[in-house]
Image (cartoon, rainbow, N blue to C red; front, top):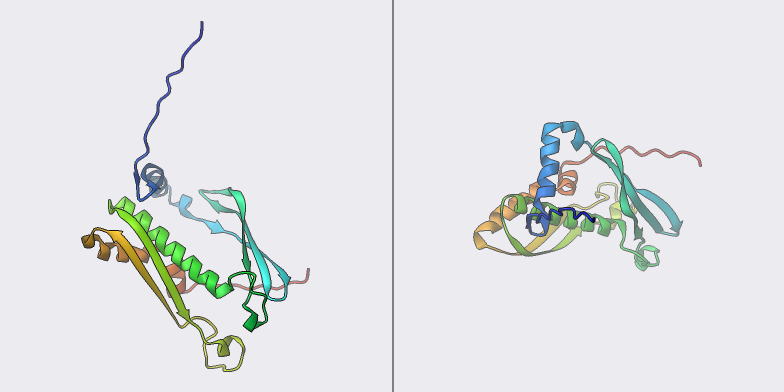
Length: 191
């Protein structure tokens, strides 16, 4: 005699492609146990040659445990030829624009979903102003990094939701790191 197991299928609630039940389970778990919210993200970088280097990301610490990604992610960086590079990857300040764009996008989409704001399309263009005289050590009074970054978003959503979507940028960790700063400790030791 064969036994048939009852298979329960549930449909996950989705908005803007975000699995709301999964997201809210995480939010509620952190509300109940705030220590679960402490995360440590990690990246490992290796210099390859010239101005080219590669960063790998394998996992992070979150929910009081080490969590491995499904795959190792690699990101190559190089400089354009005009800066003595081989142009074999976006340069680091372009990676920063990517990090900001993707974090703003993720923050807007996820927070909009939780608030019931539907987004059909969202795209952005970012540009930043940087004076190489600071990086090259030619003018000590010139900042070494970006002095201004502009992020222009275009969204397909209800017109009355546009202002609310813009406000959701304030939840972006990368936006907050850039605008508020973070302590960065640099240590160099012999290998």
